Image (cartoon, rainbow, N blue to C red; front, side, top):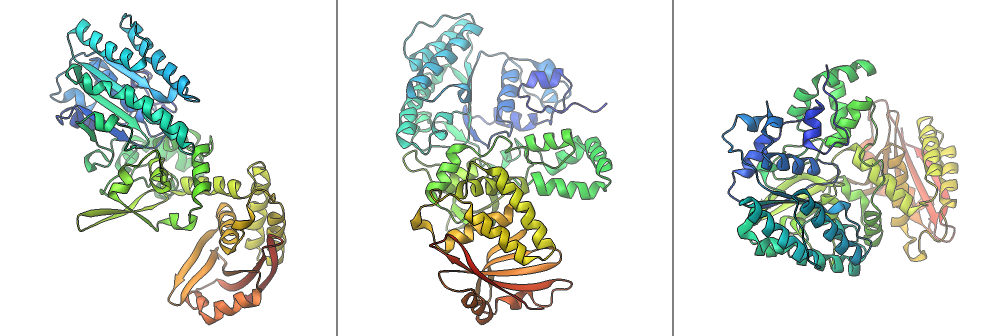
Amino acid sequence: MLKKLPIGKQTFSEIINDNCLYIDKTAYIYELLSSGAKAHFFSRPRRFGKSLLLSTLEAIFKNKRSLFKGLWIDSSNYVWKEYPVITLDVSAISKRTDLNLIQGFKDAILDNAEKYSLTINEAEPERMFQLLIHELAKKYNEKVVVLVDEYDDPIIKHVTRPEMAAKNREILHDFYKIMKSEDANLRFVFLTGVSKFAKTSVFSGLNNLVNISMQEKYSTLLGITQEELHNEFSEYIDLVAKKHSISRSILLEKIKYWYNGYRFSKSETKVYNPFSTLSFFDEGEFRNFWFESGTPTYLVELIKCNSPDIEDYEGNVTITDTYLKSYDVDNVPLLPILYDTGYLTIKDSSTRNDITRYTLGYPNFEVKNSLLESLLKVYVDEKRPEKTAAITEKLEDAILSNDLDQFFVLLRSFFASIPYEVIPVKTINEKYFQLIFYLLMRVASFRVNIEDRTSFGRIDLVLENDLAIYLFEFKVDSSPEAAIQQIKEKKYSDKYLNIPNKKLHIIGINFSSLERNISEYLIETVN
């Protein structure tokens, strides 16, 4: 029988006892436990298995060896021993206000104390935490293990509200610093999160905290490698291939296109998003699983505040190692947040003069399409996503039938539907129209290049399908003739001449900043 897929399950014992599929990562855990370091920090995007990792560590430290029968660590020389374990899931704590966060930490400490029949009589959460560690060490005559999940959630949820984020940062500072004063009573500390904030002070307070997030030896600690996909999901692969009447190899390539591509170190090894991969094999259909709940509000707000060049996210942004690894609450940069939250990943790396630089881009189709859909809602009208979905399908039909007049009728209708207050007047320029056009074409599943480079310059946008190639040049408050003339003078079309079985069209579009719409367009067929 096929092992059940542990979709949404984050408890190690439940996965094992229910005979669910578990990808054995215990060799990495053994490496972690044998490293000599006491305190670790590990960053990964949401739904990547961080909670399951902590649950597995908890089972090991509670000496539940029977659960590990047949797994790598069971046959290793690891010395099994039981320790008292404190677990804190910070994402489950309310953080709407600083008072909510303080009370949440108090409740979490009391819950842990109750598990060990301890009474904690203190008023401040940090003092409660300290007393809990001290009393557990005393009661069991053993050092204590502390496992903290999503340590930074009270900050990351308020990145666009610096004042609130700073208040929460101070609360976290006072709470986490206890682990430094109680170092003698701690056996092992492991914190997970999305980001490493430089001023949180949990990192400066814990002098021996090791950030393993970008270490090559732990690059596949979470996520599914290509080898693991082949070995662990072999029967599921065959079932889905049969369902879709395609070969195993074609299916594997499609799965890779949709869900693979995450890279977290200089190592070129990539991993699949585990939640999306499990969900795909459960349904047997290609769909957006990771972002079903939508792009987080804080991230959308951060993107709006930064007005980034979205087209560069295709793999054309570079960031230094230091800039990527930590940053401040007071000035949260967009690129590291997009990396930490899984919207961008490492595509390449290079080192020069002892400085490592990473090139970032979308990890896969699922992520790219999801982010672009979210951004289109932001720049158009967040309240009417169904209208956008309907018009993108019609745009696709118009292009596939080469009905360009209908294509522009739809585009004009779309621009006319954008509420006046959504986009400030000062942002109405060529870049704005180009971005909306780009997002719309991307969401419509067209193959799009924006500012495609040729030896003579950059084409504003190139749209391609199986039958034709369309070169677009945009102007604002000018004329489509001027746009066409630029295409010809710069010889933009030379790059695309004589491509077999494809018509080449050059299109000049003039936008009116006053009307906020396409005023004129001109189409010429080159071949």
